[in-house]
Image (cartoon, rainbow, N blue to C red; front, top):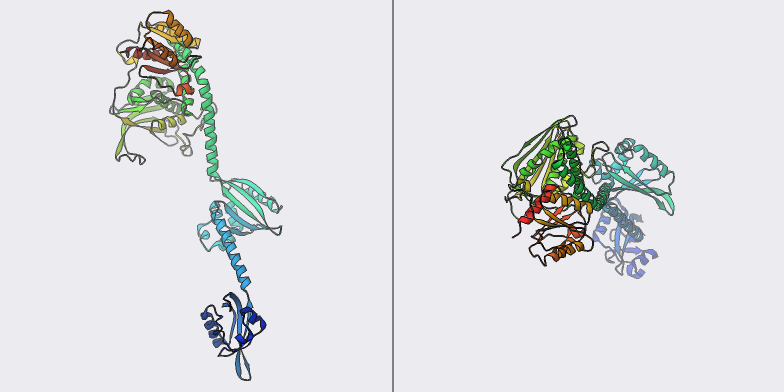
Length: 618
Protein backbone atom coordinates (compact mmCIF):
# COMPACT_ATOMS: atom_id res chain seq x y z
CA UNK A 1 0.00 0.00 0.00
CA UNK A 2 1.29 3.47 -0.98
CA UNK A 3 -0.06 6.60 0.73
CA UNK A 4 0.75 10.27 0.74
CA UNK A 5 2.81 11.48 3.68
CA UNK A 6 1.97 12.93 6.06
CA UNK A 7 -1.69 13.12 4.95
CA UNK A 8 -1.99 9.34 4.76
CA UNK A 9 -4.37 9.13 1.81
CA UNK A 10 -4.13 5.82 0.03
CA UNK A 11 -2.78 6.29 -3.49
CA UNK A 12 -2.53 2.66 -4.45
CA UNK A 13 -2.96 -0.80 -2.94
CA UNK A 14 -2.42 -4.28 -4.32
CA UNK A 15 -5.10 -6.91 -4.60
CA UNK A 16 -3.83 -8.78 -1.51
CA UNK A 17 -4.46 -5.70 0.65
CA UNK A 18 -7.94 -5.21 -0.79
CA UNK A 19 -8.87 -8.89 -0.31
CA UNK A 20 -7.53 -8.92 3.23
CA UNK A 21 -9.58 -5.92 4.31
CA UNK A 22 -12.59 -6.76 2.04
CA UNK A 23 -12.65 -3.42 0.16
CA UNK A 24 -13.26 -2.60 -3.46
CA UNK A 25 -10.51 -0.47 -5.00
CA UNK A 26 -12.89 2.48 -5.36
CA UNK A 27 -13.68 2.27 -1.61
CA UNK A 28 -10.04 2.41 -0.52
CA UNK A 29 -8.28 4.79 -2.96
CA UNK A 30 -8.26 8.37 -1.72
CA UNK A 31 -9.18 7.43 1.87
CA UNK A 32 -6.93 7.30 4.89
CA UNK A 33 -6.63 4.16 7.00
CA UNK A 34 -8.26 6.09 9.82
CA UNK A 35 -11.26 6.86 7.59
CA UNK A 36 -11.48 3.18 6.63
CA UNK A 37 -11.61 2.39 10.38
CA UNK A 38 -9.32 -0.62 10.07
CA UNK A 39 -7.29 0.04 13.27
CA UNK A 40 -8.52 -2.14 16.13
CA UNK A 41 -6.66 0.13 18.53
CA UNK A 42 -6.08 3.75 17.35
CA UNK A 43 -3.07 3.94 19.66
CA UNK A 44 -1.22 1.57 17.30
CA UNK A 45 -1.64 4.10 14.47
CA UNK A 46 -0.27 6.89 16.63
CA UNK A 47 2.70 4.73 17.63
CA UNK A 48 3.45 3.96 13.97
CA UNK A 49 3.29 7.68 13.02
CA UNK A 50 5.58 8.52 15.95
CA UNK A 51 8.20 6.05 14.72
CA UNK A 52 7.91 7.38 11.14
CA UNK A 53 8.38 10.93 12.38
CA UNK A 54 11.45 9.96 14.36
CA UNK A 55 13.28 7.65 11.98
CA UNK A 56 11.23 7.58 8.75
CA UNK A 57 10.59 3.89 9.28
CA UNK A 58 8.57 1.56 11.49
CA UNK A 59 9.49 -2.08 11.18
CA UNK A 60 8.02 -5.44 12.25
CA UNK A 61 5.13 -4.05 14.22
CA UNK A 62 2.52 -6.68 15.26
CA UNK A 63 -0.76 -4.80 14.88
CA UNK A 64 -4.33 -6.00 15.22
CA UNK A 65 -6.59 -4.74 12.41
CA UNK A 66 -10.31 -4.98 11.75
CA UNK A 67 -11.71 -5.85 8.31
CA UNK A 68 -14.74 -4.30 6.70
CA UNK A 69 -16.96 -7.14 7.97
CA UNK A 70 -15.63 -6.80 11.52
CA UNK A 71 -13.21 -9.71 11.57
CA UNK A 72 -9.88 -9.19 13.34
CA UNK A 73 -6.54 -10.01 11.74
CA UNK A 74 -3.02 -9.73 13.10
CA UNK A 75 -0.44 -8.28 10.66
CA UNK A 76 3.30 -8.01 10.86
CA UNK A 77 3.73 -4.52 9.37
CA UNK A 78 6.69 -2.43 8.22
CA UNK A 79 6.44 1.16 6.85
CA UNK A 80 9.13 3.22 5.10
CA UNK A 81 9.16 6.92 3.98
CA UNK A 82 10.16 7.27 0.32
CA UNK A 83 10.72 10.41 -1.83
CA UNK A 84 9.76 10.80 -5.46
CA UNK A 85 10.43 14.18 -7.18
CA UNK A 86 10.62 15.92 -3.82
CA UNK A 87 7.34 14.46 -2.62
CA UNK A 88 7.08 12.11 0.38
CA UNK A 89 5.12 8.90 0.39
CA UNK A 90 4.69 6.06 2.85
CA UNK A 91 5.19 2.51 1.61
CA UNK A 92 3.53 -0.07 3.88
CA UNK A 93 4.16 -3.82 3.60
CA UNK A 94 2.37 -6.34 5.78
CA UNK A 95 2.15 -10.09 6.32
CA UNK A 96 -0.97 -11.73 7.68
CA UNK A 97 0.24 -13.70 10.77
CA UNK A 98 -3.21 -14.37 12.22
CA UNK A 99 -2.95 -18.16 11.87
CA UNK A 100 0.55 -18.15 13.31
CA UNK A 101 -0.62 -16.14 16.34
CA UNK A 102 -3.56 -18.48 16.82
CA UNK A 103 -1.21 -21.44 16.63
CA UNK A 104 1.08 -19.82 19.20
CA UNK A 105 -1.91 -19.24 21.48
CA UNK A 106 -2.96 -22.87 21.17
CA UNK A 107 0.62 -23.88 21.94
CA UNK A 108 0.74 -21.62 24.99
CA UNK A 109 -2.55 -22.98 26.25
CA UNK A 110 -1.32 -26.51 25.71
CA UNK A 111 1.91 -25.79 27.57
CA UNK A 112 -0.05 -24.14 30.35
CA UNK A 113 -2.28 -27.21 30.72
CA UNK A 114 0.76 -29.47 30.66
CA UNK A 115 2.47 -27.41 33.34
CA UNK A 116 -0.68 -27.39 35.46
CA UNK A 117 -0.94 -31.17 35.03
CA UNK A 118 2.67 -31.63 36.05
CA UNK A 119 2.23 -29.54 39.17
CA UNK A 120 -1.12 -31.03 40.17
CA UNK A 121 0.10 -34.63 40.40
CA UNK A 122 1.39 -36.06 43.66
CA UNK A 123 4.23 -37.75 41.78
CA UNK A 124 7.60 -36.17 41.10
CA UNK A 125 7.98 -35.75 37.32
CA UNK A 126 11.31 -35.38 35.50
CA UNK A 127 11.73 -34.93 31.73
CA UNK A 128 15.14 -35.62 30.16
CA UNK A 129 16.60 -35.88 26.66
CA UNK A 130 18.24 -38.97 25.20
CA UNK A 131 21.53 -38.11 26.90
CA UNK A 132 19.84 -37.76 30.31
CA UNK A 133 20.05 -33.96 30.46
CA UNK A 134 17.13 -32.36 32.30
CA UNK A 135 14.52 -30.62 30.20
CA UNK A 136 11.83 -30.02 32.80
CA UNK A 137 10.54 -31.15 36.21
CA UNK A 138 7.75 -30.33 38.65
CA UNK A 139 7.73 -29.10 42.24
CA UNK A 140 7.07 -32.54 43.69
CA UNK A 141 10.22 -33.90 42.05
CA UNK A 142 12.24 -31.20 43.78
CA UNK A 143 10.64 -32.15 47.11
CA UNK A 144 11.26 -35.89 46.65
CA UNK A 145 14.95 -35.24 46.05
CA UNK A 146 15.19 -32.39 48.58
CA UNK A 147 16.67 -29.93 46.09
CA UNK A 148 17.92 -26.55 47.44
CA UNK A 149 15.01 -24.32 48.42
CA UNK A 150 16.54 -21.17 46.94
CA UNK A 151 16.79 -22.83 43.54
CA UNK A 152 13.25 -24.16 43.69
CA UNK A 153 11.89 -20.62 43.97
CA UNK A 154 9.80 -19.40 41.06
CA UNK A 155 11.88 -18.22 38.15
CA UNK A 156 14.98 -20.20 39.11
CA UNK A 157 14.16 -23.43 37.26
CA UNK A 158 16.83 -22.76 34.62
CA UNK A 159 19.41 -22.34 37.38
CA UNK A 160 18.22 -25.52 39.06
CA UNK A 161 18.41 -27.51 35.83
CA UNK A 162 21.95 -26.29 35.33
CA UNK A 163 22.84 -27.17 38.92
CA UNK A 164 21.19 -30.55 38.70
CA UNK A 165 23.10 -31.46 35.56
CA UNK A 166 26.30 -30.69 37.42
CA UNK A 167 28.13 -33.88 38.49
CA UNK A 168 28.58 -32.66 42.08
CA UNK A 169 24.86 -31.98 42.49
CA UNK A 170 24.04 -35.42 41.10
CA UNK A 171 26.49 -36.99 43.54
CA UNK A 172 24.79 -35.21 46.43
CA UNK A 173 21.43 -36.53 45.34
CA UNK A 174 22.73 -40.06 44.93
CA UNK A 175 24.11 -39.77 48.44
CA UNK A 176 20.52 -39.84 49.72
CA UNK A 177 20.08 -43.43 48.52
CA UNK A 178 20.93 -46.60 50.38
CA UNK A 179 22.41 -48.18 47.24
CA UNK A 180 23.37 -45.47 44.71
CA UNK A 181 25.46 -47.89 42.63
CA UNK A 182 22.42 -49.96 41.75
CA UNK A 183 20.57 -46.74 40.89
CA UNK A 184 23.28 -45.60 38.45
CA UNK A 185 23.58 -49.05 36.88
CA UNK A 186 19.84 -49.26 36.33
CA UNK A 187 19.69 -45.80 34.72
CA UNK A 188 22.58 -46.67 32.37
CA UNK A 189 20.79 -49.85 31.29
CA UNK A 190 17.60 -47.92 30.55
CA UNK A 191 19.34 -45.30 28.40
CA UNK A 192 20.77 -48.07 26.21
CA UNK A 193 17.20 -49.16 25.38
CA UNK A 194 15.41 -45.89 24.51
CA UNK A 195 12.15 -47.68 23.57
CA UNK A 196 11.81 -49.54 26.89
CA UNK A 197 9.66 -48.70 29.90
CA UNK A 198 10.97 -49.28 33.42
CA UNK A 199 9.95 -49.70 37.05
CA UNK A 200 11.99 -50.09 40.21
CA UNK A 201 11.94 -49.14 43.89
CA UNK A 202 14.36 -46.72 45.55
CA UNK A 203 15.22 -46.91 49.24
CA UNK A 204 16.40 -43.68 50.82
CA UNK A 205 18.68 -43.45 53.83
CA UNK A 206 16.03 -41.53 55.75
CA UNK A 207 13.66 -44.52 55.48
CA UNK A 208 11.53 -43.32 52.58
CA UNK A 209 10.49 -45.75 49.87
CA UNK A 210 9.97 -44.30 46.38
CA UNK A 211 8.64 -46.13 43.34
CA UNK A 212 10.28 -45.00 40.08
CA UNK A 213 8.63 -45.36 36.67
CA UNK A 214 9.78 -44.19 33.24
CA UNK A 215 8.35 -44.03 29.72
CA UNK A 216 10.08 -42.95 26.50
CA UNK A 217 9.02 -39.62 25.03
CA UNK A 218 8.36 -40.01 21.28
CA UNK A 219 7.78 -37.75 18.31
CA UNK A 220 6.34 -39.56 15.29
CA UNK A 221 7.29 -42.83 16.96
CA UNK A 222 10.95 -41.87 17.40
CA UNK A 223 12.31 -41.58 20.99
CA UNK A 224 13.52 -38.08 21.77
CA UNK A 225 13.77 -38.33 25.54
CA UNK A 226 12.33 -39.96 28.63
CA UNK A 227 9.78 -39.03 31.31
CA UNK A 228 10.47 -40.26 34.86
CA UNK A 229 7.95 -40.30 37.68
CA UNK A 230 8.80 -40.73 41.37
CA UNK A 231 6.07 -41.77 43.82
CA UNK A 232 6.70 -41.68 47.57
CA UNK A 233 4.94 -44.81 48.88
CA UNK A 234 6.38 -44.75 52.41
CA UNK A 235 3.00 -44.09 54.02
CA UNK A 236 1.29 -46.70 51.86
CA UNK A 237 3.93 -49.28 52.79
CA UNK A 238 3.38 -48.47 56.45
CA UNK A 239 -0.37 -48.92 56.05
CA UNK A 240 0.19 -52.20 54.23
CA UNK A 241 2.45 -53.36 57.06
CA UNK A 242 -0.18 -52.36 59.60
CA UNK A 243 -2.77 -54.29 57.61
CA UNK A 244 -0.51 -57.35 57.57
CA UNK A 245 -0.01 -57.02 61.31
CA UNK A 246 -3.76 -56.68 61.78
CA UNK A 247 -4.36 -59.79 59.69
CA UNK A 248 -1.67 -61.59 61.65
CA UNK A 249 -3.40 -60.56 64.88
CA UNK A 250 -6.71 -61.75 63.51
CA UNK A 251 -5.17 -65.11 62.64
CA UNK A 252 -3.62 -65.38 66.09
CA UNK A 253 -6.94 -64.39 67.64
CA UNK A 254 -8.77 -67.07 65.70
CA UNK A 255 -6.13 -69.63 66.63
CA UNK A 256 -6.13 -68.62 70.29
CA UNK A 257 -9.92 -68.59 70.40
CA UNK A 258 -10.06 -71.97 68.75
CA UNK A 259 -7.75 -73.65 71.26
CA UNK A 260 -8.90 -71.66 74.30
CA UNK A 261 -11.80 -73.99 75.15
CA UNK A 262 -9.81 -77.24 75.20
CA UNK A 263 -6.73 -75.60 76.65
CA UNK A 264 -8.68 -73.96 79.46
CA UNK A 265 -10.40 -77.25 80.28
CA UNK A 266 -7.02 -78.95 80.58
CA UNK A 267 -5.64 -76.13 82.71
CA UNK A 268 -8.66 -76.29 84.99
CA UNK A 269 -7.92 -79.95 85.62
CA UNK A 270 -4.18 -79.39 86.08
CA UNK A 271 -4.60 -76.43 88.40
CA UNK A 272 -7.39 -78.10 90.35
CA UNK A 273 -5.41 -81.23 91.11
CA UNK A 274 -2.45 -79.08 92.08
CA UNK A 275 -4.69 -77.31 94.61
CA UNK A 276 -5.79 -80.66 96.05
CA UNK A 277 -2.20 -81.93 96.24
CA UNK A 278 -1.07 -78.73 97.94
CA UNK A 279 -3.71 -79.28 100.62
CA UNK A 280 -2.85 -82.94 101.22
CA UNK A 281 0.69 -83.70 99.98
CA UNK A 282 3.69 -84.29 102.17
CA UNK A 283 6.08 -81.43 102.79
CA UNK A 284 8.71 -82.89 100.48
CA UNK A 285 6.50 -82.44 97.42
CA UNK A 286 5.02 -79.05 98.20
CA UNK A 287 7.58 -77.07 96.17
CA UNK A 288 7.31 -79.34 93.15
CA UNK A 289 3.52 -79.21 93.09
CA UNK A 290 3.64 -75.45 93.56
CA UNK A 291 5.90 -75.16 90.49
CA UNK A 292 3.39 -77.18 88.45
CA UNK A 293 0.59 -74.97 89.76
CA UNK A 294 2.54 -71.84 88.83
CA UNK A 295 3.26 -73.17 85.33
CA UNK A 296 -0.46 -73.87 84.85
CA UNK A 297 -1.38 -70.38 85.99
CA UNK A 298 1.12 -68.81 83.61
CA UNK A 299 -0.14 -70.97 80.76
CA UNK A 300 -3.64 -69.66 81.39
CA UNK A 301 -2.35 -66.10 81.38
CA UNK A 302 -0.51 -66.71 78.10
CA UNK A 303 -3.80 -67.71 76.47
CA UNK A 304 -5.43 -64.65 78.01
CA UNK A 305 -2.59 -62.48 76.64
CA UNK A 306 -3.22 -63.66 73.11
CA UNK A 307 -6.96 -63.19 73.49
CA UNK A 308 -6.53 -59.75 75.00
CA UNK A 309 -4.13 -58.61 72.30
CA UNK A 310 -6.44 -59.81 69.52
CA UNK A 311 -9.39 -58.11 71.32
CA UNK A 312 -11.09 -61.50 71.80
CA UNK A 313 -10.93 -61.50 75.57
CA UNK A 314 -14.08 -60.31 77.27
CA UNK A 315 -13.55 -57.11 79.23
CA UNK A 316 -15.16 -57.42 82.67
CA UNK A 317 -14.67 -54.23 84.66
CA UNK A 318 -15.67 -53.40 88.19
CA UNK A 319 -14.74 -50.77 90.73
CA UNK A 320 -11.50 -51.89 92.40
CA UNK A 321 -8.77 -50.42 94.54
CA UNK A 322 -5.50 -50.27 92.62
CA UNK A 323 -3.41 -50.59 95.78
CA UNK A 324 -5.20 -53.80 96.78
CA UNK A 325 -4.67 -55.34 93.36
CA UNK A 326 -0.93 -54.56 93.57
CA UNK A 327 -0.67 -55.82 97.14
CA UNK A 328 -2.46 -59.01 96.17
CA UNK A 329 0.03 -59.58 93.33
CA UNK A 330 3.16 -58.75 95.32
CA UNK A 331 3.94 -62.33 96.36
CA UNK A 332 3.55 -63.55 92.79
CA UNK A 333 5.72 -60.74 91.43
CA UNK A 334 8.52 -61.55 93.88
CA UNK A 335 8.51 -65.14 92.73
CA UNK A 336 8.36 -64.05 89.09
CA UNK A 337 11.40 -61.73 89.10
CA UNK A 338 13.64 -64.04 91.15
CA UNK A 339 15.95 -63.52 94.10
CA UNK A 340 18.54 -61.45 92.22
CA UNK A 341 16.14 -58.53 91.88
CA UNK A 342 14.91 -56.48 94.82
CA UNK A 343 11.23 -55.57 94.73
CA UNK A 344 10.15 -52.38 96.45
CA UNK A 345 6.46 -51.48 96.69
CA UNK A 346 5.34 -48.02 97.81
CA UNK A 347 1.55 -47.56 97.76
CA UNK A 348 0.01 -44.15 98.42
CA UNK A 349 -3.10 -44.62 100.63
CA UNK A 350 -4.67 -41.56 98.99
CA UNK A 351 -5.06 -43.41 95.68
CA UNK A 352 -8.75 -43.86 94.97
CA UNK A 353 -10.79 -46.50 93.17
CA UNK A 354 -10.69 -47.20 89.46
CA UNK A 355 -12.95 -49.10 87.11
CA UNK A 356 -10.95 -52.01 85.78
CA UNK A 357 -10.75 -55.68 84.95
CA UNK A 358 -8.75 -57.19 87.84
CA UNK A 359 -7.35 -60.01 85.74
CA UNK A 360 -6.08 -57.56 83.16
CA UNK A 361 -4.53 -55.33 85.83
CA UNK A 362 -2.64 -58.33 87.18
CA UNK A 363 -1.57 -59.13 83.65
CA UNK A 364 -0.22 -55.59 83.19
CA UNK A 365 1.82 -55.92 86.39
CA UNK A 366 3.23 -59.28 85.36
CA UNK A 367 4.12 -58.16 81.83
CA UNK A 368 5.93 -55.07 83.12
CA UNK A 369 7.69 -57.14 85.80
CA UNK A 370 8.85 -59.71 83.25
CA UNK A 371 10.03 -56.92 80.94
CA UNK A 372 12.00 -55.38 83.83
CA UNK A 373 13.43 -58.77 84.89
CA UNK A 374 14.75 -59.42 81.39
CA UNK A 375 16.39 -55.97 81.40
CA UNK A 376 18.31 -56.87 84.59
CA UNK A 377 19.97 -60.25 83.90
CA UNK A 378 22.60 -59.58 86.59
CA UNK A 379 20.12 -58.35 89.18
CA UNK A 380 18.90 -54.94 90.16
CA UNK A 381 15.91 -53.21 91.64
CA UNK A 382 12.26 -53.10 90.60
CA UNK A 383 10.20 -50.31 92.17
CA UNK A 384 6.41 -50.23 92.01
CA UNK A 385 4.65 -47.16 93.37
CA UNK A 386 1.25 -45.49 93.25
CA UNK A 387 0.21 -41.88 93.64
CA UNK A 388 -2.54 -39.46 92.71
CA UNK A 389 -2.02 -37.40 89.55
CA UNK A 390 -4.02 -34.43 88.31
CA UNK A 391 -4.17 -33.85 84.56
CA UNK A 392 -6.07 -31.45 82.35
CA UNK A 393 -9.24 -32.91 80.92
CA UNK A 394 -8.66 -34.23 77.38
CA UNK A 395 -9.58 -31.80 74.60
CA UNK A 396 -11.86 -34.48 73.14
CA UNK A 397 -14.03 -34.26 76.24
CA UNK A 398 -16.17 -31.23 75.45
CA UNK A 399 -18.71 -31.97 78.18
CA UNK A 400 -16.86 -29.92 80.75
CA UNK A 401 -13.53 -28.25 81.34
CA UNK A 402 -11.17 -28.62 84.26
CA UNK A 403 -8.95 -31.44 85.51
CA UNK A 404 -9.19 -35.19 85.99
CA UNK A 405 -7.85 -37.23 88.90
CA UNK A 406 -5.86 -40.28 87.91
CA UNK A 407 -4.55 -43.21 89.91
CA UNK A 408 -0.92 -43.29 88.83
CA UNK A 409 1.10 -46.50 88.74
CA UNK A 410 4.84 -46.30 88.14
CA UNK A 411 7.06 -49.30 87.43
CA UNK A 412 10.78 -48.47 87.44
CA UNK A 413 13.73 -50.78 86.89
CA UNK A 414 17.49 -50.30 87.02
CA UNK A 415 18.14 -52.30 83.85
CA UNK A 416 20.08 -51.46 80.73
CA UNK A 417 17.38 -49.08 79.45
CA UNK A 418 15.78 -48.65 76.05
CA UNK A 419 17.68 -47.22 73.07
CA UNK A 420 16.22 -44.00 71.72
CA UNK A 421 15.53 -45.54 68.30
CA UNK A 422 13.36 -48.23 69.96
CA UNK A 423 11.26 -46.00 72.21
CA UNK A 424 8.65 -45.35 69.53
CA UNK A 425 8.38 -49.05 68.67
CA UNK A 426 8.23 -50.89 72.00
CA UNK A 427 4.43 -51.13 71.89
CA UNK A 428 4.37 -52.52 68.35
CA UNK A 429 3.14 -56.11 68.06
CA UNK A 430 5.97 -58.65 67.78
CA UNK A 431 8.64 -56.00 68.16
CA UNK A 432 11.36 -57.21 70.52
CA UNK A 433 15.06 -56.55 71.00
CA UNK A 434 15.50 -59.85 72.82
CA UNK A 435 17.18 -62.89 71.34
CA UNK A 436 15.12 -65.44 69.43
CA UNK A 437 13.28 -67.65 71.88
CA UNK A 438 13.49 -65.12 74.73
CA UNK A 439 10.58 -62.85 73.84
CA UNK A 440 7.46 -62.88 71.72
CA UNK A 441 7.12 -59.13 71.37
CA UNK A 442 3.59 -59.34 72.77
CA UNK A 443 4.10 -58.29 76.40
CA UNK A 444 4.20 -54.50 76.03
CA UNK A 445 1.73 -54.61 73.14
CA UNK A 446 -0.76 -56.30 75.46
CA UNK A 447 -0.12 -53.68 78.15
CA UNK A 448 -0.81 -50.92 75.64
CA UNK A 449 -4.01 -52.62 74.49
CA UNK A 450 -5.24 -53.08 78.07
CA UNK A 451 -4.60 -49.42 78.87
CA UNK A 452 -6.67 -48.41 75.84
CA UNK A 453 -9.53 -50.63 77.05
CA UNK A 454 -9.37 -48.88 80.42
CA UNK A 455 -9.33 -45.38 78.85
CA UNK A 456 -5.96 -44.96 80.52
CA UNK A 457 -2.65 -43.43 79.51
CA UNK A 458 0.78 -45.02 79.33
CA UNK A 459 4.11 -43.23 79.12
CA UNK A 460 7.68 -44.46 79.12
CA UNK A 461 10.94 -42.70 79.83
CA UNK A 462 14.34 -44.30 79.54
CA UNK A 463 18.01 -43.70 78.89
CA UNK A 464 20.45 -46.43 77.86
CA UNK A 465 22.21 -47.72 80.97
CA UNK A 466 19.84 -45.90 83.33
CA UNK A 467 16.82 -48.21 83.39
CA UNK A 468 13.26 -47.43 82.37
CA UNK A 469 10.11 -46.04 83.98
CA UNK A 470 6.62 -46.94 82.81
CA UNK A 471 3.91 -44.58 84.03
CA UNK A 472 0.30 -45.78 83.83
CA UNK A 473 -2.63 -43.49 84.54
CA UNK A 474 -6.14 -44.79 85.31
CA UNK A 475 -9.10 -42.41 85.66
CA UNK A 476 -10.33 -42.48 89.27
CA UNK A 477 -13.99 -43.08 90.05
CA UNK A 478 -16.11 -42.55 93.13
CA UNK A 479 -15.38 -45.12 95.80
CA UNK A 480 -17.72 -48.07 96.20
CA UNK A 481 -17.25 -51.15 98.31
CA UNK A 482 -15.37 -53.66 96.16
CA UNK A 483 -16.59 -57.21 95.83
CA UNK A 484 -14.82 -59.31 98.42
CA UNK A 485 -13.33 -62.65 97.61
CA UNK A 486 -13.62 -65.65 99.86
CA UNK A 487 -10.17 -65.34 101.36
CA UNK A 488 -11.09 -61.82 102.51
CA UNK A 489 -14.20 -62.94 104.38
CA UNK A 490 -14.32 -63.87 108.02
CA UNK A 491 -16.57 -66.87 107.37
CA UNK A 492 -15.43 -69.98 105.50
CA UNK A 493 -16.20 -70.83 101.90
CA UNK A 494 -17.05 -74.37 102.90
CA UNK A 495 -20.64 -75.55 102.90
CA UNK A 496 -22.93 -78.57 102.96
CA UNK A 497 -25.52 -77.56 100.36
CA UNK A 498 -26.49 -79.71 97.38
CA UNK A 499 -25.06 -78.68 94.04
CA UNK A 500 -26.01 -80.01 90.61
CA UNK A 501 -22.93 -80.04 88.37
CA UNK A 502 -23.45 -80.32 84.59
CA UNK A 503 -20.29 -80.49 82.44
CA UNK A 504 -19.77 -82.40 79.19
CA UNK A 505 -15.99 -82.72 79.63
CA UNK A 506 -15.46 -85.69 81.95
CA UNK A 507 -12.05 -84.67 83.29
CA UNK A 508 -13.33 -81.20 84.17
CA UNK A 509 -16.52 -82.60 85.69
CA UNK A 510 -14.51 -84.97 87.90
CA UNK A 511 -12.13 -82.19 88.94
CA UNK A 512 -14.86 -79.68 89.79
CA UNK A 513 -16.72 -82.35 91.75
CA UNK A 514 -13.63 -83.08 93.83
CA UNK A 515 -13.05 -79.36 94.38
CA UNK A 516 -16.57 -78.93 95.73
CA UNK A 517 -16.69 -82.14 97.77
CA UNK A 518 -13.36 -81.32 99.42
CA UNK A 519 -15.05 -78.18 100.72
CA UNK A 520 -18.04 -80.07 102.16
CA UNK A 521 -20.64 -79.69 99.39
CA UNK A 522 -22.86 -82.54 98.24
CA UNK A 523 -22.52 -82.86 94.47
CA UNK A 524 -24.80 -84.48 91.92
CA UNK A 525 -23.34 -84.53 88.42
CA UNK A 526 -24.49 -85.09 84.85
CA UNK A 527 -22.63 -85.05 81.53
CA UNK A 528 -25.24 -83.02 79.62
CA UNK A 529 -28.47 -81.09 79.99
CA UNK A 530 -30.74 -83.98 79.03
CA UNK A 531 -29.31 -86.27 81.72
CA UNK A 532 -29.43 -83.45 84.24
CA UNK A 533 -33.16 -82.98 83.66
CA UNK A 534 -33.67 -86.73 83.97
CA UNK A 535 -31.73 -86.71 87.25
CA UNK A 536 -33.93 -83.91 88.58
CA UNK A 537 -37.02 -86.06 88.01
CA UNK A 538 -35.50 -88.93 90.00
CA UNK A 539 -34.57 -86.95 93.12
CA UNK A 540 -36.93 -85.18 95.45
CA UNK A 541 -34.55 -82.91 97.34
CA UNK A 542 -34.07 -79.24 96.40
CA UNK A 543 -30.99 -78.04 94.53
CA UNK A 544 -29.24 -75.09 96.19
CA UNK A 545 -27.08 -74.23 93.17
CA UNK A 546 -26.77 -75.25 89.52
CA UNK A 547 -23.17 -75.25 88.25
CA UNK A 548 -23.26 -75.74 84.47
CA UNK A 549 -21.19 -75.28 81.37
CA UNK A 550 -22.60 -72.65 78.99
CA UNK A 551 -22.12 -74.51 75.70
CA UNK A 552 -23.14 -78.18 75.64
CA UNK A 553 -24.62 -80.58 73.06
CA UNK A 554 -28.43 -80.63 72.68
CA UNK A 555 -29.34 -78.49 75.68
CA UNK A 556 -27.15 -75.52 76.64
CA UNK A 557 -26.62 -74.18 80.12
CA UNK A 558 -29.07 -71.27 79.95
CA UNK A 559 -31.83 -73.48 78.48
CA UNK A 560 -31.26 -76.01 81.28
CA UNK A 561 -31.48 -73.27 83.92
CA UNK A 562 -34.80 -71.98 82.52
CA UNK A 563 -36.24 -75.50 82.51
CA UNK A 564 -35.23 -76.08 86.15
CA UNK A 565 -36.70 -72.75 87.28
CA UNK A 566 -40.15 -73.97 86.31
CA UNK A 567 -40.17 -76.05 89.53
CA UNK A 568 -37.61 -73.98 91.46
CA UNK A 569 -38.01 -70.26 90.60
CA UNK A 570 -35.36 -69.03 93.08
CA UNK A 571 -32.65 -71.32 91.69
CA UNK A 572 -29.19 -69.75 91.66
CA UNK A 573 -26.89 -70.56 88.72
CA UNK A 574 -23.11 -70.51 88.34
CA UNK A 575 -22.06 -70.84 84.70
CA UNK A 576 -18.57 -72.07 83.80
CA UNK A 577 -17.06 -71.77 80.34
CA UNK A 578 -13.76 -72.30 78.57
CA UNK A 579 -14.89 -70.39 75.48
CA UNK A 580 -13.82 -66.81 74.83
CA UNK A 581 -14.82 -66.28 71.20
CA UNK A 582 -17.87 -68.49 70.72
CA UNK A 583 -20.84 -66.38 69.65
CA UNK A 584 -23.07 -68.07 72.22
CA UNK A 585 -20.74 -66.99 75.02
CA UNK A 586 -19.99 -63.52 73.62
CA UNK A 587 -23.69 -62.65 73.54
CA UNK A 588 -24.44 -64.48 76.80
CA UNK A 589 -25.44 -62.13 79.62
CA UNK A 590 -26.05 -63.67 83.08
CA UNK A 591 -29.14 -62.56 84.99
CA UNK A 592 -29.10 -61.10 88.47
CA UNK A 593 -29.33 -64.59 89.98
CA UNK A 594 -26.53 -65.94 87.77
CA UNK A 595 -22.76 -65.62 87.53
CA UNK A 596 -20.22 -66.59 84.85
CA UNK A 597 -16.86 -68.07 85.92
CA UNK A 598 -14.36 -68.48 83.14
CA UNK A 599 -11.90 -71.35 82.90
CA UNK A 600 -9.25 -71.97 83.98
CA UNK A 601 -10.18 -71.24 87.60
CA UNK A 602 -8.68 -72.23 90.90
CA UNK A 603 -10.38 -74.05 93.75
CA UNK A 604 -10.40 -70.78 95.66
CA UNK A 605 -12.14 -68.92 92.81
CA UNK A 606 -14.69 -71.70 92.36
CA UNK A 607 -15.72 -72.09 96.01
CA UNK A 608 -15.75 -68.31 96.43
CA UNK A 609 -18.20 -67.94 93.52
CA UNK A 610 -20.27 -70.89 94.79
CA UNK A 611 -20.54 -69.43 98.28
CA UNK A 612 -21.52 -65.99 97.00
CA UNK A 613 -24.21 -67.43 94.73
CA UNK A 614 -25.71 -69.60 97.47
CA UNK A 615 -25.62 -66.80 100.04
CA UNK A 616 -27.30 -64.40 97.61
CA UNK A 617 -30.57 -66.34 97.74
CA UNK A 618 -33.45 -64.33 99.22
